[in-house]
Image (tube, rainbow, N blue to C red; front, top):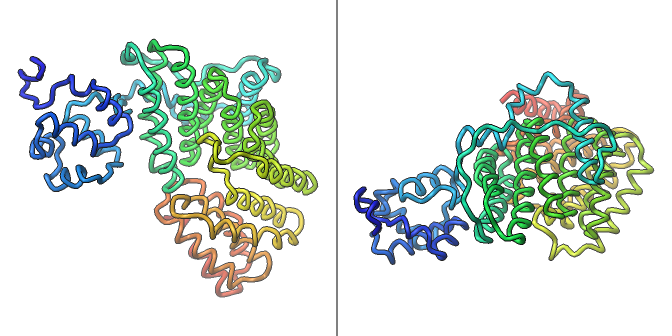
Length: 457
């Protein structure tokens, strides 16, 4: 035991946390492995329980393999045992929060949204094409307050820690919504950003750039999902810079796709299309057919919103062709979500928009595609399933099948319960409008009232 630990009466020597096996367990947040390693050091279950504020039965269950996922519990374990928070990706304070997140959205609200879009497009063009072809270089995206000192040197273990945390947090976002995990993503970033100031060999640095770019992209996506558009834009801008530094064209394409989705959500398909087209350049350069498929599908969505059914159908076909040629098994984690289920979801989504805006006959293509996607989604993709149920219900109402539309609409509302996503209400607007339009029907009226109650909650 270290002398300093002995003076403080702490049962765990600080040197224990530096051992490679322990660092690996901490990086992966394998608390059961951490506890087992502590037991080998002579630390009893009773001592672990006392330090972490858990019962001995909880400690026993964790030792048997129970996973610990809750951020507040992980933080309590780290603090109680004397683990440096950064080893578990938990470092966080207000100063680094501003550095990572940027200024509050309310402070940026004075600037017109169209101006912000043009500035982001200029930045995206500069990153993608190597020149600010749409105007002058954009301003810094976030304030730079003083930060706590960065680790002196990092290795691949530290980078793998960031990657593992990003995978875990992305899974939480898919299942429960961005509002459930955004703060934890920001906490990860506050630690990860500091690593950029650390020394490391070139291969570690390059992989760190990509890992942090992906984490910024996730922060942007969860910010968007909670309605914080300016924060989302800031994170996506940082993600572009880091992905470019890491020379990762597929990730550049993915970030541009995600920011384009923000603009689709804002009913600005023309601005979204520009970002999708820039992303397509990066996707083509990367040689990733899956990235190309994602961009084509979203370009189709933008064209559908612009009521250009010819281009929408053309891009949908290109997306399906690119997907058929893609290597899904070896795809990067940030684009692997786009599997066969998501292809059908995008087909259904594009035809739904065309059914509303161009020709109702598109329901006959939307309904089977959406049904197939919904049947394939598991509980781990609850948000996507909810979006597609809402779209399917809208198609049934457009088709005059009000009973089925109301049934699927109620299922969408049930699925939405517990998902912390600001986007759900926006994506339900077409369903709400169609239900309200048919209030003379008792099922449609009941659905409209349930949706109104959901909006009011």
